[in-house]
Each structure stands twice: as C-alpha cells, then as structure tokens.
Length: 239
Image 1 (spheres, rainbow, N blue to C red):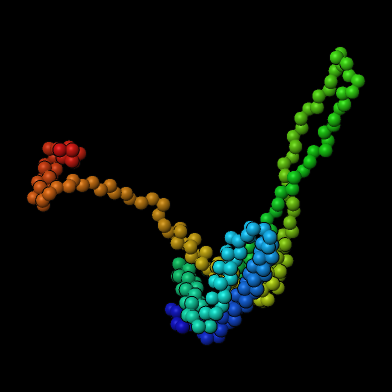
Image 2 (spheres, rainbow, N blue to C red):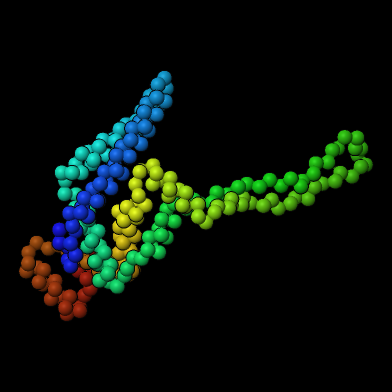
C-alpha cells in the first residue's frame, strides 16, 4: 500500500500479522485460564461469579473473533496505514519520535509505583497506676508526632524485569514489541499533544434571540422599527 511518499510492503504486513497472531493466541490462552478459574470457584456459591464469568466469556469471544478474521480482514492493513499517516503528520508539523522516547514510554509502563509502608512509633511508654493514692502525681505522656507512611524504595531498573516477564509470557521479541506496540503508541500520543496545543482555550460566543411572527411582512416591520432605534428588542418581544 502506498501512503504518501512511503510504502507498506507485503513483508511489513506479514510481520505485523505474525506478531498480532502471537499476542492474540496468548491472550486467548490467558482468558481461557481465567474463565476456568472463575467457573471452578463458582461451584457451590449460588452463582456468585456469574457476572464475572459472563464478562470473561464475552472477552474470549471477541478475542477469538479477532484472531479468526486476522488473515481475512483488511483491518490490520488499515491500522498500519493509519500509523503511517500519523507519523507523516507529526513529521510535517516538525515533530519526531526518538529511541529515547520509546525507552521512556516502556519505563513509564513497566516501572512499579512505590507503595507506602506504614511506620509504627515504638517509643511511647505506658506507666502503670497500681498503688497510687489520691495524693500521688500521675505522669502523663506527651503526644509525639508519628511519621506518616514512607515509600518503599524500588530500583530504577525494576521495569526491566517486568518487561522481560511480559515478553516471556507472550513469547515475543523485544524488538517486535517496541516496533508494533510501543512505537505506534508514542507517535499517536505525540500527535495528540501537538493537536491539543493548537486548540484554542477560548472561543467567541453568540447569543441568538428571535421574535416569532405570523408573516414575513410583520418581520420586516419589526426590523425597520429596530433600525430606527426608537424601541429595544426586549420591548418589542414583550409587546
């Protein structure tokens, strides 16, 4: 397919189809496992998982349908054409996507978010009151500021392990993952950002008012009266 000054070759379409087939096959397998788990847990629970089972079944049917049509539908080619058009438009507007941009998006998706860990103040002391008389002085503890939860440190390269786990689960190469999943997403986001920057934040507003009359002659008479300035629109509307 010819897209502007570039061409989507049969080899590119074949590579995209093979990659998509691998991803869909693994998604179907994962969804089947999830469905089996819900069905097993649903036994003897008066259909407590009924809604989840129905939801997962719908997901499975959608995935299976997409997989079945992969070799017969033009949807994948149209998707590749759209991606190529997006790249061309970003370039025309002076933008680009670099390897560093793709790396940053992978880190953003796969770097875990630190989870706060609660800390307990163990310095507080409890004073017993056994044997005290009414004349004794009871020492009271002074409240201390208890530190809030602190984030558990996460290595900066933790995303690498998560990415490797995903690649292994789907049995795909990192180069293909970057090419067919991450890179198109980054180009699409770049164009959205560029378009968003051109959309005005304010716009002219117009208030339209009208007076209903029976004939065109009456309407012309009203226009003539208004043009003379002897009365206002509101006065004529109320008449």
